[in-house]
Length: 528
Image (tube, rainbow, N blue to C red; front, side, top):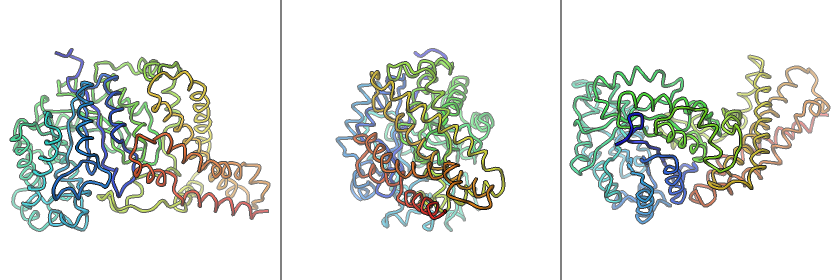
């Protein structure tokens, strides 16, 4: 029996939905999943929500959904055994409605798509959709025979009523009933298999009449990430409680802040505030518990979520003294005293224009596979607009300060490296993070200094470019490019599937970025 302020379910999420033959993000291999499980135990967590997507070894016809380097059945069994040994309960997540790009991209499933032009969602009235959903559930449960819960997704189904048949159904019964017509069948099937289904809350809450259609055993996972796009926690949560008993609700903050696409590191303080708020709300209403979601859409490494995971364990365990957690963080995680390490991490976090940002490069809002290439010229043009419409040097001053903070952090981390007693790979990530931050910030500083000179000096000379350190910053970025790229590879080697690591290195450090630096430097050298 847990104490009143300790949540029964204290969870973290591993999501591999950007890791496949089409997208290169740096998600965990089996060894890294096990590393995360051990860190979860160390942090006081007891539940792992795992979204395998294409890394699951689907069977039969559905084998084509799996990526070329998917986990084997034995590897999945190894993960579940590791979880059991460490007191971690696994909840597998399988998408059976929306977010099924990885399925609909294959020709055999086009007849299941609600909108073939934008293959994001299954058609809820197609018998083939329900047949496929049941098959995915069966495969998932076969390799998780001891699981009590299965998460069936169901979020962000923005195409409800798109096909002609569904449009007619909506005209007669409403969108909410279309959603529940399909998801009720899927959740009832899971219940018939002896497991408790979990759904994301957003679509059901958007059409609250649908909530009455579900079996009372269905749980809803309420997510709110504490940024501008999600607004108040209280309003949607209170609306959900009107329809769903707190004993059927799981709360979810996020490990990587959604507002920072284009950042290579998220503000710990922003994440902490979100985690504290959601955990406190769930404790107050006596919910099932909380699971910290972790989405790789930003492009940040999975390493960057481990700080949030550790704070989730602290907070879901009934504590909310952020200062206490921060003061003990380095000692408890690495066995070394680094005063104010979380403060130093806060000082280098945030958006960097030149860093690859996943969301900004999607060509189609619903389709993760439809992406524009990294465009250095576009990025430089966007930076230039700061100087055309405002005082762009404000951002320049901020970046100079943040780069100094990154270099100071790097010096501190290297100084204490010989003293590290545990979680060495996680510590090496922070060294890489400081290096990457200084690299991308330095590059942007060089570009902004160039624009500063162009704005305030009618006649640009080579002497001015030297005086304002334009060439210095750009040349240093060029000199560091290959070294930082290799450091990224070394830090993740053995913890990320090799195919994905190779792709991710090219994604984080694209040739277009290097050639863009060369082009700007070449123009500088032509100026006398």
